[in-house]
Image (cartoon, rainbow, N blue to C red; front, top):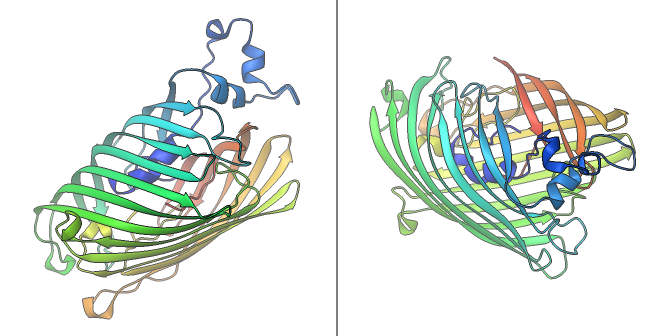
Length: 384
């Protein structure tokens, strides 16, 4: 998964992803007499962490592996706690999970934070909340897509709260969220054409968002059937505690189809747009494997991806994927539209937790400028 570490701007997404990452600790003395029952599936006698994740007591230590090209390689550690198994009696209900995490990359980017995903009242209420702090070091390419970018650092603190309610007994959820992001930004240079306030400046963003969500996937980790879709309207305003007034709009859909028991087709489409005077980090960007985060930003971004998973041996899956996206800019700003940006790649997965439907593995992606690899836990895509 691409962003469990990238920046504080997407840490709400990070919390969900960190919370489902499994790790195998071969400590036989801790499981005397039950090692085989704990770490192997009695059905096929293959390595499986389902029982360990769902039946253990206490906090799990979970390593974080960072492979994002925008911030470099790195790692960290999370403490994860599963609350009461799989989230109630409703079929396909995800578990409630709490996590605290810290990580650092080779370029000096780091974060520290924690959060909770709550699945309440037989999965009729879903809550996600998080708080964190950190430092992000990246390149800013602007809306004109500078070739090498301008180095910047952002110190950030954030708070995120979200709650969604199931509509009647359907697969639809409606909800509301609040985000507060306080930043101190330092740029190596601030050319006038980038439209930055200066070399150093502070900025605070605060938003209240309304969400409509549909989710009938057979599991939230590595789905093989079903659809997840979300429409979100975000109001960033001084009213909520921010420095600017602007709006963002996003529509996303993920679709999974089992063509046959050994072949799964995944489709993804995202459309994101904004209006108003927003800070540099708030502009939508093309978010796909093989492409640096924030490299292609615009007032609007459209992208699509396809992924095909094939089970070539028991529990082992080969993955092929590809996608295209484009960033568009308002003509009033004088910025350019990007070319159509493509990425493609191959991956390998292992079904590490059968009861959770959770696969893990490695992807190698080729973009227009970089070849990158990603450690994947669960699906490569999420709505956040």
